[in-house]
Amino acid sequence: MINNKMLIFSGRANFALSKEICDYINIPLGDSDISNFPDGEILVHIKENVRGKDVFAIQSTSCPGNTNLMELLIMIDALKRSSAKRITAVLPYYGYARQDRKIEPRVPITSKLVADLITAAGANRVLTMDLHAGQIQAFFDIPVDHLFATPILIEYIKKKNLNKDMVVVSPDPGGVERARAFAKRLDVSLAIIDKRRDAPGETKVMNIIGEVKDKNVLIVDDMIDTAGTLTEATKALINNGAHDVYTCCTHAVLSGPALERISSSQLKEVIVTNTIPLDGKDDICKKIKVLSVAELLGEAIIRIHNETSVSSLFI
Image (tube, rainbow, N blue to C red; front, top):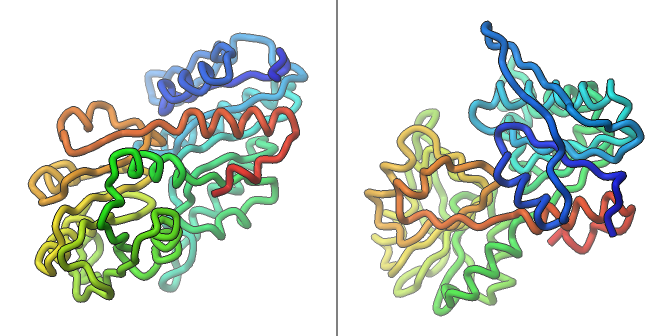
């Protein structure tokens, strides 16, 4: 049950997704105005009373990451200074998540910095999806609800019977846990690609661990950025006797040459969600299929507001 004590506001990055979430919950999107001064500074104006309300601020910190992050922080600050009772920052995509540890001397752990900024801005809680590294939850000193898009992706795969005679493939050893969860729920086997990174942004597939010959393949990852890893993996799988190659991920970053690489590759279908707005990229590349996470996020928001368990959604 929803009462008038809940309000949802959206940043510019996720306006369409926020509208979907509000339609699912059956409440109107909160009235706010986000604009820029001539010098680029961001102004957020909350145009309705939020005093004593349970407020959810939705914003992915996707490209342009710095702008969207500042927009979220300013929106949270505006809500805090307007006496909102509780502010939940809803980040369908958590930017800077790949900078989660020191990989060499004298580099930052930026995902921890972002967590500190969100907390300092005034957020009381965070709701996010498919973090690149699960330990990022511990970077916050406030509660974090970490959802997974796995049920949405698996439901689509089962409906299309894509799991028939299929093997799930992890594109690197670090993604084995995610791929194993997919393989278990689809009741198929698992394979792993061993890759070696020759230079930043470039990958070279060296070896495939597992049997893919005469199989349809589903490559599972949390995000697709430049699609370099994905297309190299696809070539290696085809060269090792795989039939059709599909891929699914939660976050379609799709930067740089990603669309061109996907279009010219032997990939059959790229299944993604709308945690990051595609802005027509799926129209340019017909291989991309977009699934909505609005109901999953909407259900989590309802449960957080009603102070009921969210744990059943953590699958």
